[in-house]
Structures are given as structure tokens and as C-alpha cells.
Length: 110
Image 1: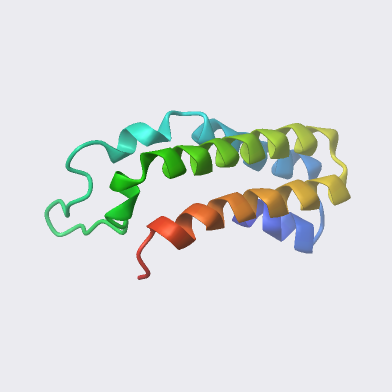
Image 2: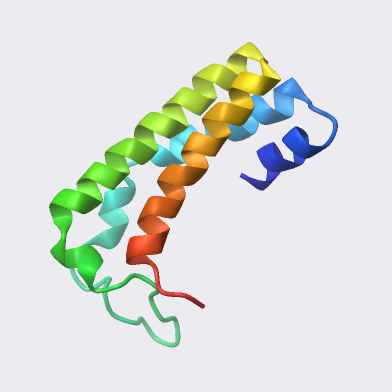
């Protein structure tokens, strides 16, 4: 996200943006949900989780937010390949909104 934001605020490099967008889409489509299996709602050693307990109780909503994140990530990758800065800025904003929707609801503050 930082690489894309930097390009949108500075000198735009289509290749850097496309590479970053593809990496984000790869993560979005990697099966991230598997990272949140049984027991991951608890600290492990000295590493505390930042996931709120509601995340593990509201599967339907979590799934909806995950699908929205995947769609936004895939759209950004597609748009970034074309190199249209304005279109990338719009798609990047939508991806940011998708990330924020989950983080705001299900992630504890530092």
C-alpha cells in the first residue's frame, strides 16, 4: 500500500505500482482466512493478537468483508496494469476502504 501511495503522491512509476498491486492481490487471494483458525484468538508466547473476539463470532460479516477486499485488490491489479493514474487512484481508494472496514471493526488499537 505504501509503495502505491508513494507513487500516487510523487513520481508515478507504472511498473512499481503494477508490481505492488499484484503483490496485494496475491495476498488477498492466498487464503488468508486460514491464518485465523482455532486458537488464533489467543496470545502465543509474548505475541499478543490484535484481532477482536467478535471476528471469530461474526463469520458471515467477516466473509463479506473478505470478499470485498478480494474484489478491490483484484480490481486494483487489473487497473494498475493499464497504467491510468486516475483509475489507479480510484481503485486504490476503494481498496483502502475495504481494508479499513475490517480493521475498524475487528482490529484492536495498538
